[in-house]
Image 1: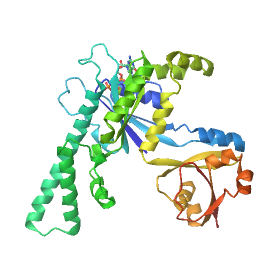
Image 2: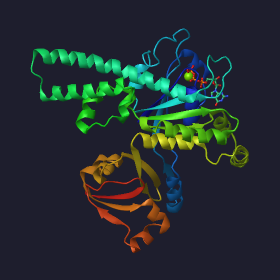
Image 3: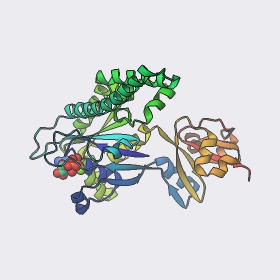
Image 4: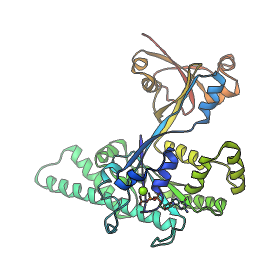
Length: 359
Ligand SMILES: Nc1nc2c(ncn2[C@@H]2O[C@H](COP(=O)(O)OP(=O)(O)OP(=O)(O)O)[C@@H](O)[C@H]2O)c(=O)[nH]1
Ligand SMILES: [Mg+2]
């Protein structure tokens, strides 16, 4: 699963990339203008808690990969942000995180204006998709003029027309209501405005708590476009990351912030991908595993090991909240909270599973 960082030049993409992935800036790599990729763990307090309860020797978290592409070369300002050499990499991403500059920058051509930048990038995404859709639409239309279209082609043409209308209306494809087959018909085009998108508002250091309510305001403003906005200050977060626990508490209290934004962004982008976690726990290890919303017990078993899916008999399921409340398996079993579920059981976020299997 990977998330591509996008945004206007100098909006703070690379700063946010290093912050989210815990990597250090490398001046040599930056100079080479190569894209950066790094896998990072998604923090999960449930893993920590279960690990403690089970006295696990090892804790394993889920992961997400981030991708940062270099900004445009100087003088390339007329080029669309998404038509450059790195557009292929972005088209391959499962989701996008749009970094928006909320701080004033010396030498910048324009002052910070987050709503303006969000709209601009959104328009760029829509424009880029429109080119792809129109091309395919024209080609298909020519074909159906000379020969009777198959059912598949008729459906595709219909979907393309709906997508085109949506884009011409200035709206992203992510909020177009499509069925499973229609979505599938569009998948191959790797359309950018269809990808889930999180906005990371990179705010100025001063007055951070006011700034965070600004992020909430923007979330409301852009809700209809299917985006969520999270505010942070990459500069402050980078500093927080360098402090020890005690200093960190003091520093955060001074600023009036209660949470590390890095964790919020990582968790939000995980959810944004339509992902959720089920858990396994024991003295050997406590681990969070990734599944998509709606996946079943046998699919979850397959994530752990294909043999578990093949030999699947039943899953013992107890939810994390019950597990903690009853202080572990013994208490849960006594209250009948450990259920036996079959293959088709839809796994919920936070379910703790034991797979019973043959062989
Ligand atoms: N004051 C302040 N400056 C920041 C912050 N985040 C980034 N910057 C500065 O903004 C400039 C651009 O940051 P980058 O992270 O390189 O931005 P970018 O989007 O990767 O830039 P390109 O790749 O060139 O498009 C740098 O000078 C950073 O030091 C922030 O939170 N506060
Ligand atoms: Mg950069």
